[in-house]
Image 1: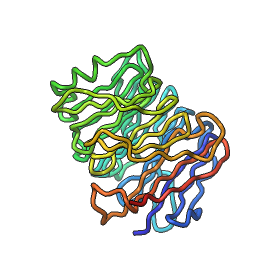
Image 2: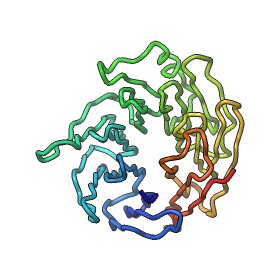
Image 3: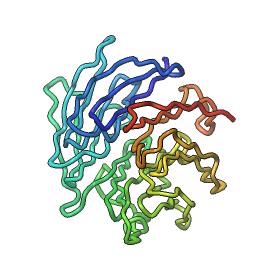
Image 4: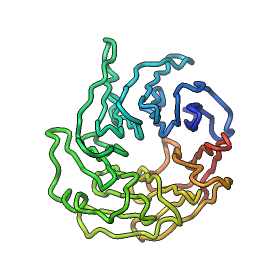
Length: 293
């Protein structure tokens, strides 16, 4: 299967581009009324979801060569995150209205979203899942909560995550593929890492607010993007910076999201040959990087 990336812009525009050429494969047009905050591919790239500040998340299904709208999750406030379950049976959303949205994808009936209020007085900024799909991490301004979907209870080491508060705002929480590590980022510039079996620690982070973090498939590296218009990669075993990319934009906070894609046959511990795609919202351009050694 050829590789592709999906990107969204502040105008509500959603696009799919090919790798390595960067050729426009499909434009959905301005499907949202406000910024597209996050996009995510589902299993085998036959599903695509976009979360927007207009309070909606749209889910698209590819049939043949055509993309069709499958369903919409409408929240009371902006939707900041969207994530597919690894088994491809559902998609989750996180909204500033404090609710977790869910849309089942394996139904033959008209898809009906459901909503669970996890927070009554806090905005939800992010939702991520581990590779099993059993563990879900939700993030608010003050920290993160790890949930076991079997009973919606939290593990004992969850307490350390909940207690973290620096008087600053957490923008995003990332869960490692094996659910044994959590990374929190925000306007405290640094990266806060919570391993399950050892003490939490900091990494230096960025010169501005850190907006998003993403574990690589093997869980040994962490990718981050910041308001300093830089994408950085971190080695979590050595706790060191691997590289830093300065994006070609002079506008502050030009990048809110990025896509990371690796060849399907590649080792999960190797970054060589993987791609980073960053939409520059102000310039309405996409920057593509292929990682080397």
